[in-house]
Length: 251
Image (cartoon, rainbow, N blue to C red; front, top):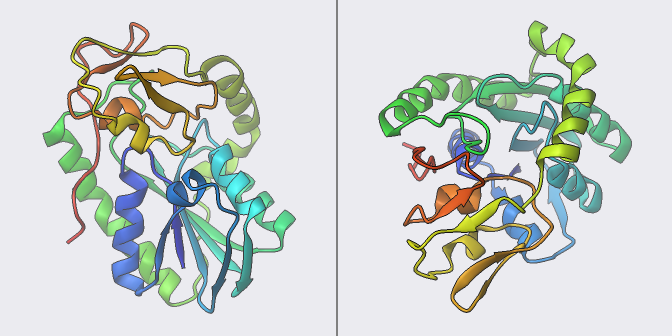
């Protein structure tokens, strides 16, 4: 069974591609969290968690989901970690979470996908994003084949050193950067409500036809990158930048 969390579609794309290769059911962590459900899942096949890396760790929202969810059946658990550049020591903390909740960590695979963290970094245009995704596909399929054959995913050597720095990077990220305060809607906003629909944490509501952000934000960038009118900005850091939202279907 495959579980994915995705802000702008990278991990969703990878999860669906793996699902087509392995024949596994694909479950959206976003939908489970948005609906406020505490779930129980049973799978005779290994568990596969597909998620982005936030500041060299798995997102806190994903860890919370795993800790609050009951998994029965096969306890072998694989991680597919999407990133714009590096996953650091995210594998180590994924393993730590597994050990603490009774799952058997079977390794992690890093997959470089188009950068989506528009609040800090440059985001590729469509042509660049398409090229990056095309290059990522073989790695995704290779990992899927290994999982299908019950083989562990080896930890890349460069990721071994990342575990030493990841706690510091993550602490800085969540303490000083993660906040919904910087988001705002421009006059291009039509009040369509797409941003509220995309917000996994239900942190967005419409008031008077305008989006209003609460305080529970994970900086997944779904609202700003998924707005069909590019009517959302973050502080002064996103003006003029292309938005990236992966809506491509897997072949």
